[in-house]
Image (cartoon, rainbow, N blue to C red; front, side, top):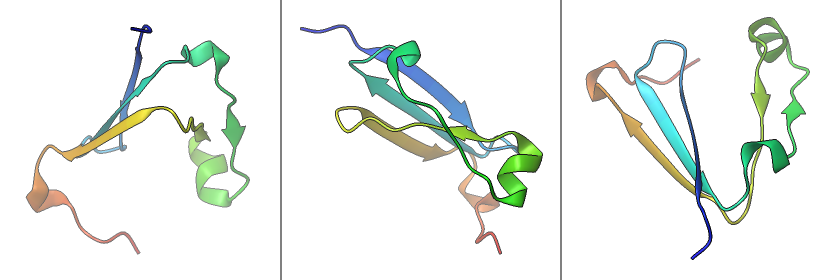
Length: 68
């Protein structure tokens, strides 16, 4: 079985958490930068890997609302 690398994070308030389990180490994944004003202001970076498993969960579902 191949080694799995765990990468995790959260939204800025901590309510939404995520974990990605990937066969590729983080340093081997491409990183992209979004150019929109929100992402530029907050330094957002993102990546994806088709063979990875992504888990999402809410720490407190009462705090999850539609972001407008």
